[in-house]
Length: 133
Image 1 (tube, one colour):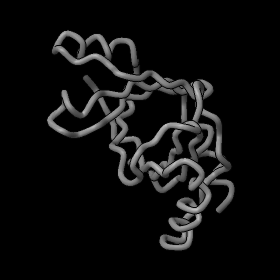
Image 2: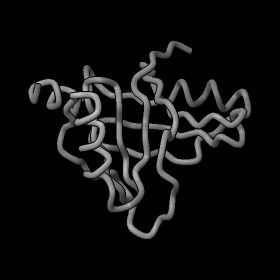
Image 3: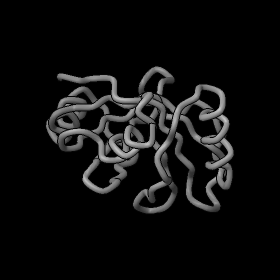
Image 4: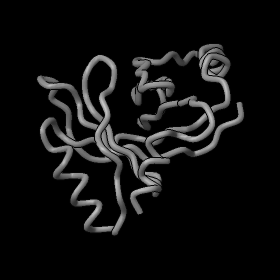
């Protein structure tokens, strides 16, 4: 399977997305785009530096911090089939616009959470962040 490290994903507790984003902007002198909605709830922001900050939907209690890493694949269906043949199936398949992801359970991946993602050309939100520099 051909993969490329796409980004490191961090998770903010519900209601703290703007606070965490501002902290990283001030700490590392980077810019994030505006938050976008995730299908089935939650929000996410992206930066051209390779950091994503996500926020779970209201009512979902999750710890903040490093969530995992995201690997970009040229064809998500083929990549999922390869992992399925090895006994791994996604626990969540979020869609954000034209970007599709498959998230894998860290209890089945040696304690490391990761996601595979596919999107055409370059990520639209990262393009917006680049223009904000």
